[in-house]
Length: 115
Length: 118
Image (cartoon, rainbow over all chains, first blue to last red; front, side, top):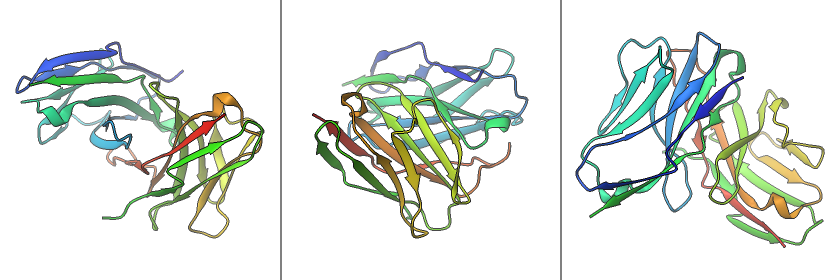
């Protein structure tokens, strides 16, 4: 079964510090993709970053990077130099090759950036 | 920048009433989805739609739910007889392709329709 686990329901981080949001996944597929989405208080879902299972290098997008450890089946999101505007809910998600038309989400981590 | 649009942004309805949530996906996208998020909880997959038919649905998507793409631009979610537990934010999403391992296949989400069932 495909599964995404986010074990941190909430985190508090001081502004300008780096933060790591944990995500582990479970799949028997060899080919899959991992996503992170941000959901601010407005409710919209904002795509942040993507990592393919065959990508040899960790994905990076500006202040976001994905720490992909395939053997451990983890895909942690790292936000460098956090900002107040980073306060939001963050969802890890996965798409697998045999279920290509469905993306499943973790339960999310609520990140609070403190001034 | 192209975007997915959803209407209404908020709907309040009585239990047992029918509700239709509307979505206009990005025009050249081929894959369409509905997700829902009960307040404070995870985003749950409801259904995917491709080539004018449902390609996959979750156990949540029972006979009370249906989807339609009536005119090639709108993508609707209908709930025939709403229940209290249907109260949630409903997100429409679309993809241009499902992607491969070198393609993000990014989902573009609408801003959501909040449904409140009384």
